[in-house]
Structures are given as C-alpha cells and as structure tokens.
Length: 149
Image 1: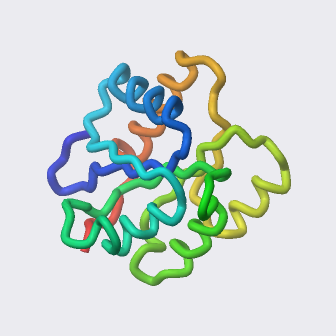
Image 2: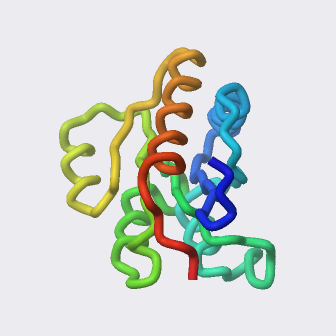
Image 3: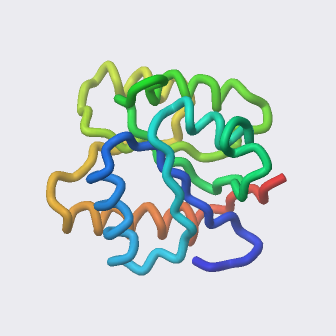
C-alpha cells in the first residue's frame, strides 16, 4: 500500500478527539501505511482542501481519501460533502462517511450528495481495526485512484 505513485494521504474530519485516537490506533494495528491527518470540523476540512486559513502555504497534501463524520460543529459533514462534490477539482477525491448514524434518511441523503461509501462506526475497537484494514485494502490496495494534481 505504499506505492509512491498513489496518493496515500488520508484526511479524517472528526470532532471527537477520542474517536480520532481510536482510528489512529486502529490504523497502526492493521499496519496501514498512510499519512493520516485530522481536521475537527467541516469548515477546517474545506480550509485544508482549499489551502486557506491556517493551511495556506502549509504542508497540506491532497488526500487520496477523506473519512468524514456527519455530526460536527461549525459545518457538518453533509454541508462539507455538498461543497466537495460540487467542486470540479475536489469531486474526484473519494469520501467515505464514517459515522454513528444508521438512519435511512442519512444513508439516502449522503449517497445523493455523492459520497462513495456510508459506514456506521463499529462499537468495539476490534471491529474498528477490521474496518480500517478493509478500507485500507480497498482504497489503497484494490482500486485505482487518480493522481493528485
């Protein structure tokens, strides 16, 4: 999974610091060789992607995958997803919604907005490790992702 010609930056938008730590530990546990970066809300996610605010001139490589929580302060995942998929240059970045929601209305609306996947967060750490293993294998070991511009 460490092909220098494939994007291996994973950007996770998650407001819960405990969830961020769990995902980081789960990725380490399953030996994902990715550069995992975090933002705390949808507004910060868009700042990162557009390289504005604190990310202007910063080391902010284009992610090969975005893991997106739905319920965040300032700008939630739905609003951020709408902007990402509505932007010609960003819409090619795969977005996997990783949330506690299991609501049919959320699932339907997220796919309508252009998400690539909708996954409910596992409750147990072992389930999260298995999920990260599957996500890593699929997005960085199976599919072909476009090179960053």
